[in-house]
Image (tube, rainbow, N blue to C red; front, top):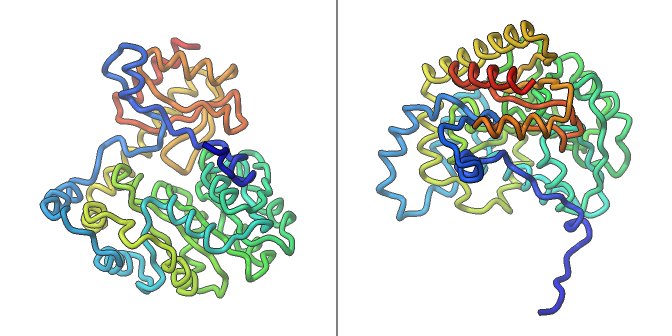
Length: 362
């Protein structure tokens, strides 16, 4: 076979490494009863109403799903109070990131991203041949002034994760509005709000509030976290109709499965599950903050369902030691924080087990 021709900007991409699955851990270490606190998933499970709805449509999976996602888009339109034409569905919000970069970027364009943040921003932008400009965080928070300073005539897109992954920090309304005035009106600002439902700070800005600002502000949200539907891969974007019109030209026709659409529609109605999840996460965070304070272990408050812990030594070593105890967390070495680990809030018994294991590791 001849050597395949691949663009250098593709070869320069490092593959995304997801959190280790429980099954893989137990095979490798010959253990059972493991817990996963690494991937920011909902520890309760999926919305019960979503499960019921999925069971109700599963006999029809021999048919293609509604390629327009009409019923789910109408449900989101009512839920969010925005026009249906401003909503687009994705196979997870990751897919919408890919649609945006494919539709609006060309080789040589520039994309500004905070660093560290969700790794898929950089992967998708580089896959379109764009040049990445990374702006380091400032005290674990996104540096909007630093991002504004990087903007040039070649800048086409800016990514902002709010709350930011992996740090859990947020941006205020006043800070974002000041930043907005510094951004040229033809630069797309992508606001990823995967964890927005867990925010406790009323000063946190929300991208949807700027939908009608006359600026190309795109807001991404997901059913993976608060509703526990990560395995269905269903997310959505809210944006000006001019942008949805472009994205729908290249969006795969059946990118949201019939099971995902049915589950998501039902999940939006499951207010009891929503409240239960938020309460569990907030109570779990408070419990772990108090416990770590008593243990004298430095940690950082968060507005998401995960938080950072300073382990004071090589995070990879702590990660491996916890794996041996059947606990999966995330080392932040690949994010540029070799002394930090990231932990997702689990069920109360899982939080207790993690804290006891961490104390033993120390």
